[in-house]
Image (cartoon, rainbow, N blue to C red; front, top):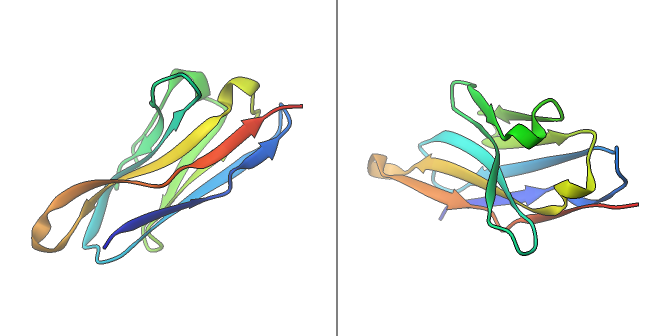
Length: 120
């Protein structure tokens, strides 16, 4: 069974930084795109950043220049470095990955979410 386990969320003051990590485990043949989404109270889940297995990155306009997504394929882990955090970044952050299983089935998985709160 495949799991995505996130860590690194918490409470931070405006202007501060946090680094989120998400590690995939289980019977995995390969991982295609990995990404981070977020959902604030009363809002829909939205894309924050995605990275392909070749390293191509895409960011939401609201986080460009402040957030950086990276991955370590050997560790099956994706990271989100968040700098210059703003109260508007407060949300539950979810890891997402397209994972190739045995028999080359490709399945999309979500992590359980980690809370990020930006407040003074």
